[in-house]
Length: 315
Image 1 (cartoon, one colour):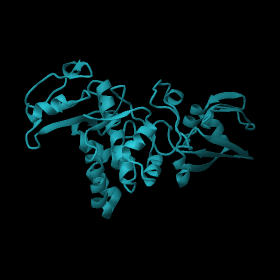
Image 2 (cartoon, rainbow, N blue to C red):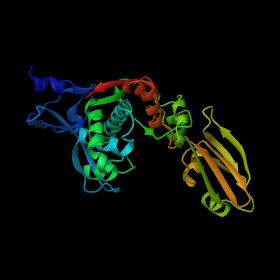
Image 3 (cartoon, rainbow, N blue to C red):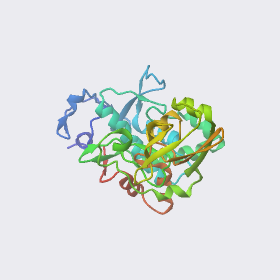
Image 4 (cartoon, rainbow, N blue to C red):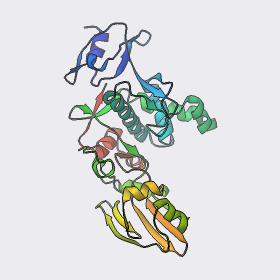
């Protein structure tokens, strides 16, 4: 059997790839034909080239195809500090690749936005602007992390997962069920105590009382916070403000908070809100990944900690 056929048979996940010769191998019990996939051979590299459909616009207009690994380099550059440890960058690369492939597998011809709507993607020009004189060093560092994990994705029960990730936790991640109302056994609350070692762990914000009330659409003669219900991981699930019941997610969204682990204090006409963590809290904590990498954990260790009972597979 020649090298080309071996590579095609090795594919585990339905994706968009390119070749001169069309074949329909079974993938997870389903043929590639079901996904209307096109194959094309990269003659120079003599290997399959995986591509993703992306757009630079929020409305996802004018989409174009981009080499998967080039896309992942741009996402790692945009989503994680390039100063992070190599193992953290590798974990981010696998998570970003998995997220993209999940989207395109579950949604035929899905267009990935290059903004925060999906994953932030930076072009080389944007990287040069971001890193300045350090561009060559950081670009090569990110590129190496991506290429050392080339084609690797996370699966659960032999199916590619939705690899959510975020900046920093309150010391624990949260479950997909609690945050997104998605029942995913691999996205449950896990310890992430490494996050507490970073300055970004705590944030304090002060806003005036009238603005606070306006954003929550409540009466504002005075502010009374009561009946705060927290989960075991300390994220707020419910609370009552001036007689109106909110979920923690409601307050998080309406006040543009950094986390759903928050405390509200009122002092005359000022409201001070202290938050712990930054982001939705589901999946891999990026600062937690850095903390684990600092302690010598590998990227596989990091991924299996944050995505429970998953496996790393190669496309």
